[in-house]
Length: 302
Image 1 (cartoon, rainbow, N blue to C red):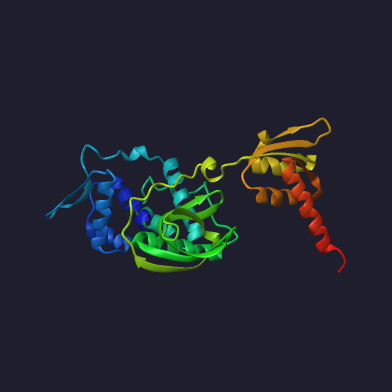
Image 2 (image 1 turned 180 degrees about the vertical axis):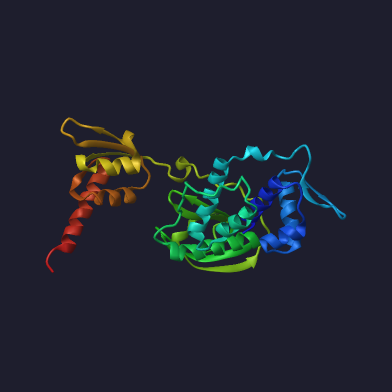
């Protein structure tokens, strides 16, 4: 995994005066050509790396620019490693753990022995999600098209995209890419993607960073008022925070929010069963009552 290797190389250069391409190639189990590409990538990122030839030659960070190793404390490294290890929780591999084991071989003071920050990004769908994430990453690294069947509220369709970013947001994984079918950039949820397949190589575009602001993705527009029983407080706090409701004299909770999707709102309210009463908007209140009547008919008789 390239990002892990780049961080590993940088950590080694911060801990020693000089190293060589063969040493790095052996440590990370890659070719010298791959190490050369990694060094070029670090240079493009603004890290002043110097390579010298000859008997005492090697790779080092330019003198005068070298970052003092005290800049990264043990606590700093713990935070960095926790973030890296979180990738193992969804990848189904131990790549980061193996990388950290290699780096800690020298018993550096920068490599903390214990970990007190644990981040698990896996989900109930880990078995199916891990291979999807792996394939998406491969397609991004090698610049190959990605084809898949996509399940959306408006129906299912086949899509082919140029994948550019793999994103973890709102508790789920997404891929951001240029959709050939829509001739525009789109965000796709991995849990709704099936039958993923590699496609032909593509020439990478200067892809914009995805705009993931809540107001952009979830524009709102539905002003909601709901009356909840007191026992629902823990769920409201967990899902929306303490500012989403006011406690009435009788203990009930007057909930108010700006919601995005009417269908999701009604589905969410039904999870509270008889403990919630939708007050506004009135048109959705009527739609919810109508839906409940239809459900009642479905359950009548046998």
